Image (spheres, one colour):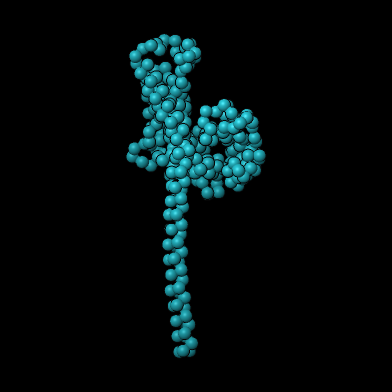
Length: 276
């Protein structure tokens, strides 16, 4: 399944291969995406569903977002401010926030040639994904493209430095380093490996084993999404209850103040009537 770059692609398992466009998907109340209708028709036409019968995961729905635009001239907007980005034709940050709140696992990929967090990426991290650290996993992908170790160190360091300016914490979260898996059954050298690299060397073999272990760990996090669904629902219920409690406290304070001001008004009015 090849995800698109200009829209949100939803991939799920089914009995037979089929595709659905945005209006059909969002118009189906059983799919759970009807809430995206508030973001307008431009978004609806940039959403599609791919149902495939050969997927290994049958209880998971994957959502691939369009690539984020890293332009330093982009202004940072805030969700709910009414000034979302319009270069896509819809509020990209708002849509990302809507999907992230309902997701159980969030994977944020960075490519080696673009390890920065400027422009749209910075805005999404600070606005759309704020408060979702418990299910956010940051991944530096395609690290097998580096031919020298100092290139990897430079990209990894740049990503850590940029994330430190975005994430308001002393320690940045873990960054998973992943690569394209090498199939031993193919019996041939992958195209992305330089000719001078010895696949049988102990250092290279150890590096591949470490990258493979990290990839399997990320796969395990994704496979645990159905089990984490209950935990996330409890967390959302707790947050909603806390917000409701805060509203009740505020309303009770307003009611008490209103009753007090009302009593003062009647006392003043009675005093004017008696002595007038």
